[in-house]
Length: 288
Image 1 (tube, rainbow, N blue to C red):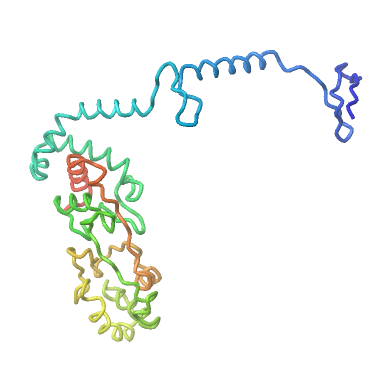
Image 2: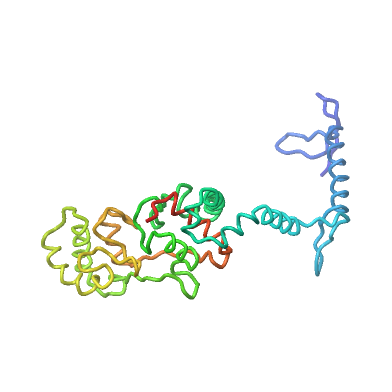
């Protein structure tokens, strides 16, 4: 029950509520707090009148200012395109080789490419293009699908294992998961791949796996394990590994047959932007 009393110490009336012998004082709110509160209410009302605010059944209140973030973005993009107009026109008509031979046009392409790379590609490949486990390092000279300007442009346009009808596509079989090889054969093949990269491996396992490699793997990776750029098959004799070079990682790749997906940027960017991005990657990250 409510039992409002005067607090003996402060002389303030209590609210009548009591918890564990502690009574709540009925102090008024600070005047400054009240002014801030009512000012916030007034500001909210003004905002509701001026700006889009309240949702409705088939839309929302537009506000007397007619403000639209979407319209502003469209306008800003149009202004940006206008500023880039001259450079974009040059990129459109120039070949990739001509862009790299023209210092001014190349500088423009690099500037655009850097911006696009940072906003769209760095999430997977890193800000410096050095990649990570499962994401290609664009700083070295190892390219699964070729590192020429034309190859890079093609990969950017159609993607890898993407939904583009002409996407670059390769499929590493899941030899263990799909029971194409026995667990013992997968173990032997792991040792064989380790040996291909000129590291110490179990000689008996290597001997047992050699004919299996020629039957199952050489069609893509080649008889010597050198890979095939046209198929996107990696070179197994070098020191570059997309999913890791330790035995556990190699075993997992043979067992599960992992393969990543790269988006087809041709559906998102115009050809000039794709060119600029290709030039940026080629110039700054180990292009061939």
